[in-house]
Image (cartoon, rainbow, N blue to C red; front, side, top):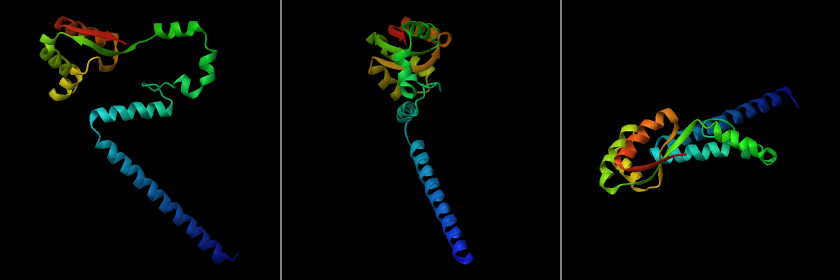
Length: 157
């Protein structure tokens, strides 16, 4: 191969790389734009799905079943008890509520979430449902007590 042919081949490879990088960049840009246009609930669903596909737990720790399925079968029953005892983050789930207190419960849900009136109403009406995820016991207790006073049945999971 002559020197000129080698330079042309290198130039072609560089051009191909630039085009493929540009195409990848446009693809990533398109995906980012699509994600930005999702509503809050769709973004949450996407985030959960993405973390599951990546083998991550909600807070970043690898999920044992996804990354190392053989290790879960080898685990001892005592390790499950210690994991349950160490749980520090909870999801607040609305099990049921008093129909007379529905409006007060919706107002209270809006106070500790960033939901609008319609979203909070829709959420409360589809009981049982998770009202808020990733709460510590200290954060959840005052909210749970207030909702129980209003006539709601709340469970921390």
